[in-house]
Amino acid sequence: MDFDAWLVSYISDDQPFEYFIYRRSKKRAEYLFTTRPELTGRKLSKMIGFDYSARDGLRIQAYLSLPPQTPLLGPAQLHGDRLELARQGMLPKKPQRLIVLIHGGPKLRDFFGFAAINAWLTSRGYAVLQVNFRGSVGFGKNLTNAGNGEWGRKMHQDLLDGIDFLVHNGIADKRQIAIMGGSYGGYATLVGMTGFYKDMTTMLGRRYLKSRSPLYFANRVKHPLMIVHGANDPRVKQAESDQFVAALMKNHIPVTYIVFPDEGHGPRKPHNTLAMAGFIEEFLHKCLHGDVEPFHLGQYNSTAVLLSDARKEIKNGEKEEAKEFFFLNDNLNKVFIKKSHKLPSLNKRKFIEEFGRKVELMRTSKEIKREKA
Image (cartoon, rainbow, N blue to C red; front, top):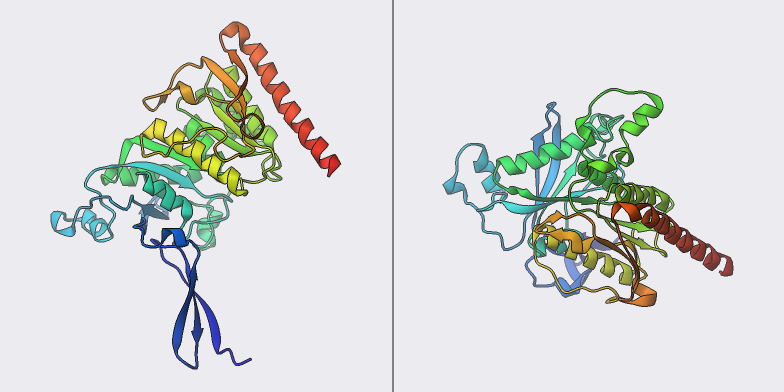
């Protein structure tokens, strides 16, 4: 082996990865392919790396992606600290709708480079903030270890400080901010929705664990919420989402709850990922009024099961008191509504019992399929 031929990948933030074969003897690179040919020639968002100080002085690294057509302020129009932000292409002429996209782990990190989810969300008119909060890896042990014992506390404050940085500099509109993520990012989303990070009292043992669990603060949810779960998830069991949704229902708090019976730690099958994108895009449109493509249940023949549907309760970005919840099955029944219940106080207990029964039936069905396999 003379190592004459090298496979080279070209990584960019505003175009999908490209692959070349480089021959040392000829000193020439030959183009092979791009991972997303359908995006060739399209203007996609750029990812800008920056850092800011958390409230305790720790430097936090983050990425900002703006919608590709966003008009920007030029350096000539500014001075001081904002001048450097303008040179980086971070300052829009008007504050943007913002989605805080939180990575999992938490001992993982966000990287520079093309990401399909960023291209998708920015194409719909949302700016995207990705924070490598304390507890993330890739920035030294001090930053990683700074997250020890800080779930729902300083790790979350790092996210809030990043949002404050963008709002203070006119990058984000504080009235139009959404938070989303998977795995640890899902936990952090519930932390933000319940707001229990404001209670900074020190506790030990079981009280300590309860003080970091959104479940025990579910009654504090004030804004629209959507939860998506894979029934075969080996890391975060479906029961975790079930009990949180039940706690919301107990307090008459609307929630849209979608379960994929044949998925694990996040949807992977194309028809399911497309359906999940449709649900999310529609949800964000109702809350933040970004662009949206038409979507309806059954469009992609996914296996999505809506155990609770409160999408109709979202008006002008805010939720109203729950009137109805629906049980829908995308794969078997398309748009057929199997059952609905009103939720006045007299029927609340009955509905929660029905919700539990529905979840149990789905689990039993899954076990039968496993036995047959």
